[in-house]
Length: 303
Image (tube, rainbow, N blue to C red):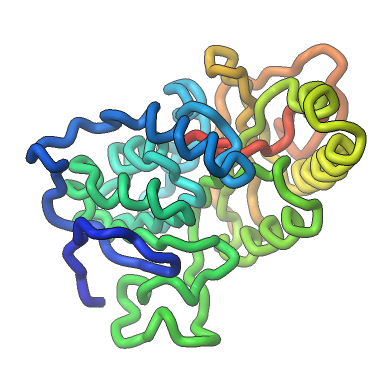
């Protein structure tokens, strides 16, 4: 697969490149995460439906979301991150992944994608990890992505090209901002993209149902509840556990799920927490899940 040096120009939709080389800001310097809070807030105000949060996620939540990449089999991993935002989770992933692993980052927001393209830490590890960035919706894969490593001449933009499969997916999509049918399509896509026994993480903020009712009215509240029911059923069928990041602002619950089949060992999601009044249980180790803690996403975001 051809490696493309990342440019400094605008990122257009369906743009996909490998991240390699050294990236700097206009002054020739780039501090990891520098200026991310302001960029994140600006984009949240501009496109809240797709961003789903007003600040990047904290360390506790980021660590919970990246557990499958740290509790891993003794072989190379292929990881997909969806909705990377300004790269809080991405930078954690490149620190824990090893040479020979693969990381594919999908970020539909061109401004966030440009931030990722000029991140020094991502650029420094990019070659070792085969780090790729696709500026598109995950629903548009594989059409917006380059060939996977080892697939030589395959044209990633060719209609009907086969999708790459992943050991781990870290999702940053703000599911509770979407329509139920759209959430179902994305969840089904995740199952197709995961290898048998592959693992998925996502998160949701606590207290979102009440906040939605107070700020959006009955119609949006009903849509929100429908998404929560859908996510709860998905978690009951495929869930391994969940963990509340109480120190996150606002507090959030990270969910860990596994696709059917395979024999990958169960990943410990860390200390599980249940709040008063929660109901519902998933598979082995899954804690109760409330309507206030659905998958709100990393674009309800660990961005």
